[in-house]
Picture 1: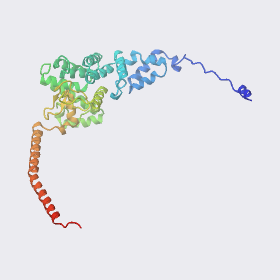
Picture 2: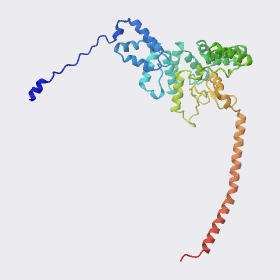
Picture 3: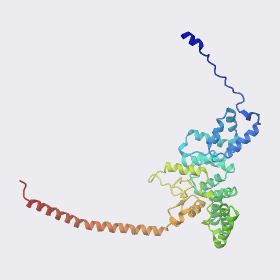
Picture 4: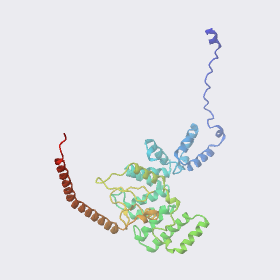
Length: 377
């Protein structure tokens, strides 16, 4: 019976051989140049690195084409961005690979991380300069900020001429905040010949650009025009008009700035007395000081500090105007509060003997009453 059952079993069917040819399916008939152009467009519009990695998992041929320098060079800033909690050696290798293949956003992102987060100022500075040579506006502005503050380069010496040149370069490439910093340099003669009239023209241009970015439609521009007619000084204000904070400036200037903010939120700077390093007060900037007293303070309150004039302008319009208190005012309030606290302490100290005497009298009365009471039988 057992032998009959064994004979009745169906023979095992061998596994089908793996077909390695034609891995790309319908894409096999398309020219490779066309597939590269499609992948380049995909990488330029990707929202995260996973969009690129998912394409690499399709087949070996797609993996080879995705790593083509043409595709990597066109990858967007979001495609080469990394979250701080996922920073690891693999993320570092990914950014290095993208930067070495000519991606300016990857060079800038990695340069900011190395310069401000990892303490590798030399390597980070070289990466930022590579991005500047590639025509990256944010990298040019970041390099200008480094020169403007003298951050850990050339013995911490400020170089206003180099900063002004890089501010001008970033402004020509479309960076909105760089134009305001350039106007500040020209108006005050920082690195360039002082020219108040030219500084006012640059300030007017910066305010006008912000108006156009804030009110893009025709109906909104009509409202903005009415506002300018009623407030003619808003286009010449050094800190800008309160009605012009473009959406592009309310958010993160670049994924690198968000990385810095999240990184230092999870890894705060060491407290005094080892060193006193503070962050730029602009919430969406994220740049920390590389040495003590590096950033300029708010001239009114002396508490807020800024890495650049554009950060000060935006922070003033985004809420610092309601928080800023003149130095002499909060100092007098602190002195008054200290005097009130001392007076309260003196009154409490004077009241303590009377409280102690009352407690002693009350205790003696209780003792005498206990002595007069009859003993229990």
